[in-house]
Image (cartoon, rainbow, N blue to C red; front, top):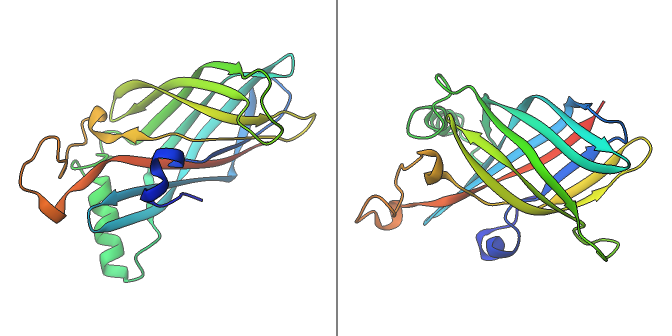
Amino acid sequence: MIKPRYNISVALLTLFLSLSALAGTSIDIHKSQVEWMGEKVTGQHNGNLQLKRGEVEIKDGRLTGGKLVFDMKSIRVLDIEDKKRNKSLERHLKDEDFFGVSNYPYSVFEITSAHPIKKAGDDAENYDLSGELTIKGITHTVSFKARVDIKSRHSKASGMILVDRTRYGIKYKSGKFFEGLGDRAIYDDFAISFEVVTK
């Protein structure tokens, strides 16, 4: 679902939302999926995590808002088959070098504006979305384009986003803050991909 680094500038994050035409509709966390990808000089890692809860708001057939709460304790690594190495990275992602899940068990994305794009093509992004993303208790605005298709029952949307981890205090092996890392450096940007479905 997430494209490799050579295409990051075009599409690092694909966000798929399945929405209904009812305001305040809850998201089915059991049918929803959340994936992440992080990259370093020598390669990349990917995995998933779960939603704690979420809802979307629809008014007059238009997406107007929504909120997703991510369960950071559920972070899993998918690309490492060796169990020992897999669990080692998983623990590291959960500790203070990265997401500090003991103190910050949840991250939140809340849509603050959703504007339809006029004359968008049938398969093109047709919404400009902005919202507040909170990670480790730090909140910043993120914006991205999305494809939103609202129907009477289940609608869909897709979009792209890129998150700079250093804005949220995650500086581990970042070239912005540490010199001489060489091939041990980890890129500041990471991607999160959602596939969420409403009840």
